[in-house]
Length: 142
Image (cartoon, rainbow, N blue to C red; front, side, top):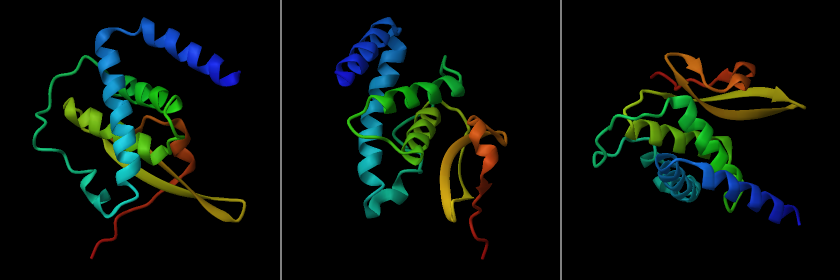
């Protein structure tokens, strides 16, 4: 019964979306599926490269709106998506639209363990307020 309520709510929201947002949602849904699979394979290193076949296009969407839409699509996906999967998909969608964003991964102690989180930043400012609670992991310099 809860599933039907969730599905009905999602379908109502879908029907109210403008066509460009529907297209972005479809793109995000497919990318979430592909990224979810590729993150579990040796091909994961290819995910963060900007694909040469996509020329950045001007976008009417603000980066925060694209991230919000990706997160909304992730909520109704066939599997629960992680913050890393959502951040990778949003970054790719924003790159396709010419936005310059950075994927950050951070950690914090939680109940004696390390808790990790992934988010996007633009000009050093996170789109996710919870990012402030994490210490950013840096790439090692050799």
